[in-house]
Amino acid sequence: MDLKRETAFILALLFLCYLLFFFRLGTPPLWDTDEGMHAATSKGMVQSGDWITPTLNGERFYDKPALYNWFVSFSFLVFGFNEFSARLPSALLGTGCVLLVYLIGRTMAGSLAGFLSGVVLATSGEQVILSRAVVHDMALAFFVSLALYFFYLGIKDGCHRKKYFLLFYASVGFAVLAKGPIGALLPSLVIGFFLLVRRRPGLLKELIRAPGSLRVLAIAAPWYVLIILKNREYGPYFFMQQNLMNFVSAEARHHAPVSFYVPVLAGGFFPWFCFLPLALFQGLKDQMERREGTIFLTIWFVVIFVFFSTASSKLPTYLLPLFPAASCLVGLLWHDLLKDRGGDLHRRFIYCFLLLLGISVFAIGYVWFQSFPEFKADYGLDMTRVRYFGMPMLGVLTLSFGLFAKKRWQASLFALTGALVSCFVFIFLVIVPMMNPYRSTKGLALSLDRLLSPGQKLVFVRVLRDSALFYTNREAVVLMTRKELTRFLNSPERVFCVIRKSLFEKNETWRRMAYIIAEEGHKVLVSNKE
Image 1 (cartoon, rainbow, N blue to C red):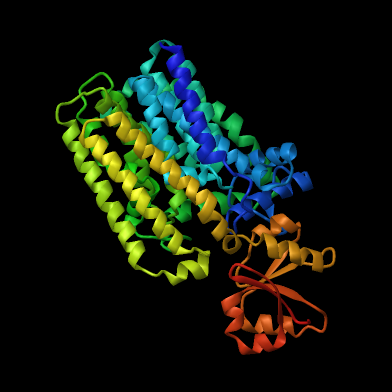
Image 2 (cartoon, rainbow, N blue to C red):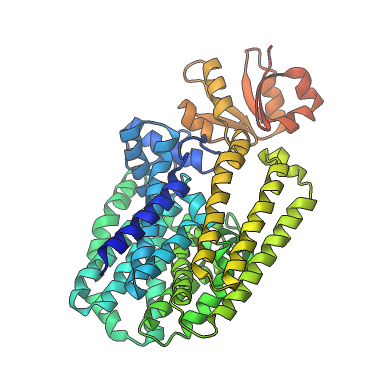
């Protein structure tokens, strides 16, 4: 083992994670929907001292278990109530996923394979976005990946198998505490299909004989027991409605067709998605000593993809637990190329690059010739800047392809990775600042907080802007109908509310009754008195 080489690889991955996960992490305000909601829930835990029952907007919040909220709450205790503290747990968990992928690749094919796998995961779009957002999914992805990593170590190392299996169960316990029963179901399905395919029932017996179920219960059960004792309605709601019915019911929230995750995976794992079909094919035909490992990764990827595709409720973030497996498969593929294994691998890579260039040309051309007025209205995006940035990006991708065609594979990979890092830095410096006023309500919330008396609630029209809950420590009400808003503005006292600007301006009655006193993005703060 070359210690200097491994240290260099790990430091390079940590630097990459710093650029992509931590750079300007605390600069953007918290965005509405999810970020504001989870940050406000965690802040409420700290302020109330109740670390068992999460609350949001004055009501008990049963949608998610408490583990991720605890992480954010501890971060608040150390660094204060700010954006950096709120996002820090996700950035750390995202970095942990990258290092886990390095360890998995290293176990299967050496440190270079681990490094390449880590680079792939660190530069995947969905991984970058969720490592910089206040969402629970990163905790689930980390602990599910950790559990499957310990299981794989257990099947590889018979001498220390019991120890690894116990660590596997401990990781499952934290996964259950992070997202509920899905934290145990996902690794169980992956392992079950793997043992079935490999015809190793003896391993299943060893896994079951390990006193792991007690470890899972010791980690996950205390909080579930405590919250059910305090809130009897929690069990039926969370386990039946939030988990089972969201999977099987056609009326579940976020219902989407079976094909929903194909474009999600293509976009969230771009550009590495273009190499994924070849990675799956190459892994399954691999007859060398790591065959079992590639089969394990393939089953990990396929089982999670199929599972979430068959569920009724679908969100792009649900796919995150399969990204480590996909990254390892693509990393191993590039490792094979750099090690010059397989005579026709270079030719197959050419097809992957052509697919990458074709998609890029189509996407840039589509953006160039379309106006996208809704992007400006809804997100504040100036598509002119995006268009002109797309051209140099296409140039770098073409350079990467040219280097690859000349069999300068390391230079090609470096150019491709550099293009991705540059793209994300451009997003952090240019795109995100344009979107902030449209995706966050921080400015209006702080203005409104100064105008309202203590204890007075925030008022929103049609949409709860949850970032305002975090910034003001106030509760909020949402007026859903025109009659409710008209009655509210007719109040004899001075009142305030936040409404979408286009909605306010197209209603002549409201324009006569109220005045715009502040504006942020596509939202306005209005009052019935000047």
